[in-house]
Length: 472
Image (cartoon, rainbow, N blue to C red):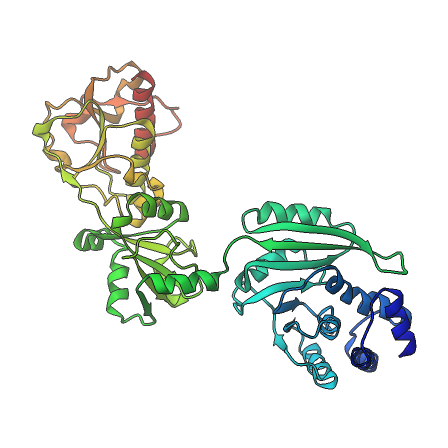
């Protein structure tokens, strides 16, 4: 014990008598159980003092360590146990996944009489949400993986302290690129263990964003919350109907998935955003969400039934905007009016996206068309249903033949030679049947290679819209 005290003093670390006795008890237990549990490969007495205990204590001299402090992957208790002995006022959480080492840690805490120490048996994941002000680790895991794991528990403005070797530059680059908006590197301090040539590097990251538990608590206060756990729940049954065009038309509501599209709806049509749908472990409604937005939490199994695209991200329930009717007697606005008869909702969405991209004046949905707010249409449109006026038109067969319509078919005059009126309608045929005979007789074709029979309907629309916009 006297030699232990001398080594600590040579490193500038002065221990009270109780602290010295606790370090000696910890060291004795470590030696006693090491052969059985393989707790450390360092066996020389002086090396154990310097590489294990002194090295663990040094961050507590270099930094004002936050409390509560989570020691991630603590193994036999390092750096957590030495830090707790040296700074007894810190509340400590020791996280260790190996059962025998968990039992050893319990023995250490009891033998040393440590208070304010809790042991978490198991691997820390982003779902671990016990709030901590700081995390410290000597583990060899890459830093970006550690930052990901502590996102559920580390408080806003919390610190993550890494005790690394000197050559960790590539890890710093990866962590910076991956978590540019979530964590900031505020300290990069190279040092050596006193009286040795052993080089170390102390890195500290500060959390910039809020943890999930904090955002969830705020959202709970800001929004009405509904929890669904049963397939028989009437609200869940209504939500499942929104996966079909018929259910969408009948209810006047739809489900939106995809984070980019959801952000657009919240920003541009907040009054039409009705509910935020998430699993109970997912992100809550964002802070800028309208106050009337309900928050519907579902069990993972129920949520996955609604998440047909497997995005594993929250969804938005919206109230549909009115789609004004269009009658042929109105004619067409200046520019191109795209007439859509497609029954495949993905083709509808893709065509709407092209209409928005090339500046079509409006989109007229014919009676045969799939609903533009069908989940597949919304996904294919990339949210552009908000960017182009939508109208509801008659059936394909009810279009008068004297309308200025340019129809697309696999036969007819070359599109490149066509003249585009100042105001006209662009019409592609339905998938399969194509165009009715009157329109087929005067259709335009897109020249393609002879080995291909035809283009996909939505692709043909995109080519024609591009040709028109190029000449407009």
